[in-house]
Length: 137
Image (cartoon, rainbow, N blue to C red):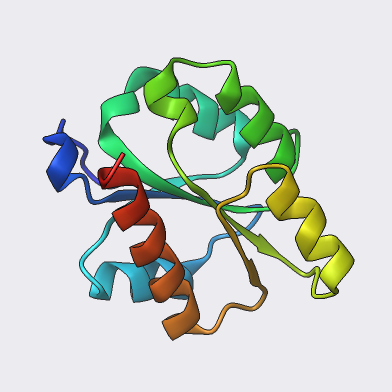
């Protein structure tokens, strides 16, 4: 993980990337767009990081399919944590591209899905929208 320090809510720029694999390019694109990244290898590690530093995060970017905890399971677990964590928008990276699958994700509270492999500009736009949504709460 990159160095973390508490930030004022209006200045949060930390984005957490959770993936079954290292997503070097996704991190690089977001870092070049000015976001600070914290990498978690799976949903369990992500929950531990969120519990210990809830004020640091403004957006979560996660894969749907991961070891131990799926992206949807992670979202469900976040709903059980303090409200500051429950309000963090989640962007789901998924191979699902059909309308039924997309609707399934959004109906469960995912802020936005991005089909893998993500187009860099679409991923950055999704994160910026999620970030603006979070800081306007």
